[in-house]
Length: 146
Image (cartoon, rainbow, N blue to C red; front, side):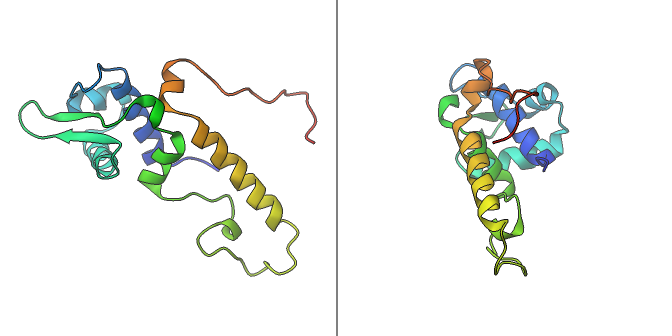
């Protein structure tokens, strides 16, 4: 599994906006430079985030973008859903909810559990966590899975 470029760039832009003073409007060129994303692509992403209530868009000569909420209230999961829609680890946990092998599939419960775990991690991780340097514990490389 890999995050889309849209999700990655959205998170980068939001993290940069979170470094600004609360309510400070920052222009697209500055955000683009800081997030290392092309302006046209970032503009589309930020407009999507504005429609979803994650950023505020300000028009005019001094226009730009600002966070719409506190960084501690913006989870990674919400950002990913805003720009890419719901994610799923396998077809059986997606919108269709079933694959051709659904009946009698021993993996289905495992995929649902994995999906739930991933969503929980993404839901618990916020933009503020990144700014504070809080990281998730890394699995011990020598540990055996349970």
